[in-house]
Amino acid sequence: MDAYIKAISYYLPEKVLTNADLVRDYPEWDAEKVAKKVGILERHIAAENETAGDMAVEAANRLFDEYGINAENIDFILLCTQSQDYHLPSTACIVQDRLEIPTSAGALDFNLGCSGYEYGLSLAKGLIVGGMAKNVLLLTAETYTRYLHPKDHGNRSIFGDAASATIVSTEGKYKIGEFVFGTDGRRFEDLIVRTGCARTPDKIGGIESDDGGYVKSSDFLYMNGSEIFNFTLDVVPEMVKNVLAKNNLQKEDVGEFIFHQANSFMLSTIRKICHFEKDKFLIDMEHTGNTVSNTVPIALKNYLSNGGDAKTIMLAGFGVGLSWAGCVISK
Image (cartoon, helix red, strand yellow):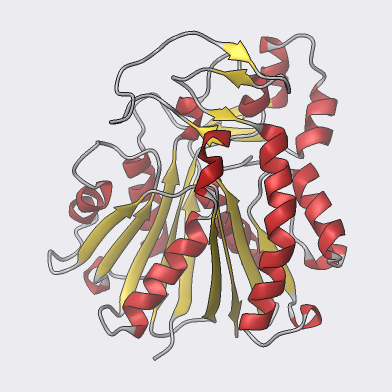
């Protein structure tokens, strides 16, 4: 049995943070330089009382309405988030009730960042191929902006909030192919929020900057930008090579490459190193920013909605963990 991507929708919060807004907070900045460096003009910010669970429900309802899908036909929910509503229970369980999905459906959260969509597709495919489900609702939802220190101008210029919903089913437009995964937990401290969980439950306070000028506070998200950049350039070319080999493809067989939308500079560098044709490598983050596990489904949805019709598409994510994953989908 094969597994297919049948439908995709997404949700963006109403509040928008523009580059002009950031320049008001950081007068030494130039809005045009910000846009040129990261390729982002604006990003959406979750409302004060809006959670990842709320946004996941919004994305799912949009998907149901757009494609005429009945919640009664969903038999498993997978929710990728690092912004869960509670330490417990799983936010996916709450989403099941709010969407009125049958109690016979399975539901679970999985905690992963920028490679989360590809991992989620692999889990959904496993449920389908294993005969355990017929229609899996794969959700991604993040409110990363809650983890950003107000003085962290670098990450505030990059990250936005969003949610996506994908139906993985026994039928659909794109068949999900073979996957390649990778993990390097030795480098976990390069992208981290230290406090708030079992290892360090209490807030520590304090703020400093690392050698690259990135704000470093244990109570907020810290990203070692230069190390994440180097990590990406280390692992992505090999991952691309392995995904092609595992799916018995040549680079020329792929009609579109849709990778995690980290920032435009990183993506442009990846494209050059991997020797991808410019018109086959999607960069789509101007109006959303880096929405972590949501970037690939948002970019894929936009690509298809704008008439994109490649026979074979490579999807890839890489980042927090440190982790990476890639696959192909094909008609």
